[in-house]
Length: 470
Image 1 (cartoon, rainbow, N blue to C red):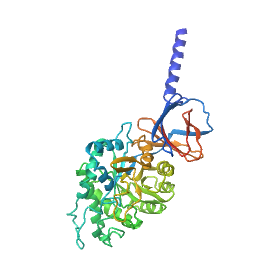
Image 2: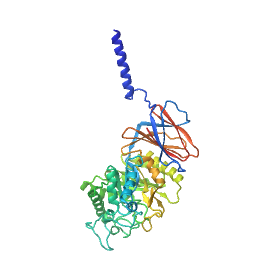
Image 3: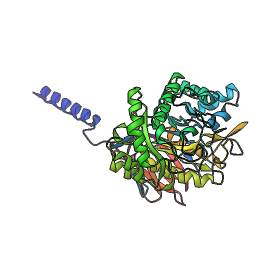
């Protein structure tokens, strides 16, 4: 009888231990190590690894950030930049070894790499290209309805060879393509600046997208998504083109969507691609029952409006995705000011408002903010300044604090915010948790990171951003 009681007791103990391991008892992460990386506004630390600290069952700080991995939100596609033709031109001027080292640092997974995993590219010229071009430029008065003169020639010089190198480093990187303008012969003003797509060329322009995606695929480059038009409500850039919500809905439902379907193209169609002050634009397109089935989601910039507008669109159409595709850092900006604003809005703000992607603007420029088109942006500061050497600007660290630690397939999870502490948290595919925190205040803040019943005590200097991984 005694031996039976001992056996029952042992079995009961084993069952309860297994139950706790499976999460059926009180969860606890005490003793887990937290690795973390810090960037300060005064640049004394630049994405620099800090001494490890651990979770314990106590908590000595007044402030607490509670991270809850049982509450999950959107799946993340990635963080990165627009890989402009001008950026590619500058990188391609370097020798083979220097170029490879730079690309490995940007797109690789080594300790010194920032692991950029999402790129936006121009479908034709952006305003930060070496020249204005499309893939079907013709002399005045000529048209090419069959697109028989379609050519990627300009992109084969710098953009495509470098994208092929990037894909060799990270075959899973996602690429979004965006046109700044249709070929001028398709437009009502026959000009690279402003104007609208003539309705008679809607189907031709849809085939232009098809040809582009197929031609890039033939070069080994898969275009994961396209937006219809960069900044469709701004016709003053070079190049640029206007397209209102009704025009975009018409183009999608009657031309681009059917063209993709007929050509078995699975590239995602993303609409809008402009500022957060006009959530009515993407909502209007998504409200069109014939256009909506072809649309994957909506893209945003933040030169006007509030990032919370992304949640307005999500709430109206929760079955559609959101992308944040552009925000510049400028020549007159300060490192500390840009670090705080961009981490608060572009990294934390977009993610907390349902975005799958967070991109800053151009990857690289030279010391004079070139190249750019005539009339294009002459104050856009890239993540890198390339003038023989490599200068890593504030955008490098803004994106690096996310891209280095949050791989594609991660899910945003719940995290609280308090006072001047702004946060966003993720659960990675490997099970590790990532917390990005910004101290937007003027004094050092000490706080607890609380996770599954345990606290990890840490502090963050004023104006600093940190990424924590456990």
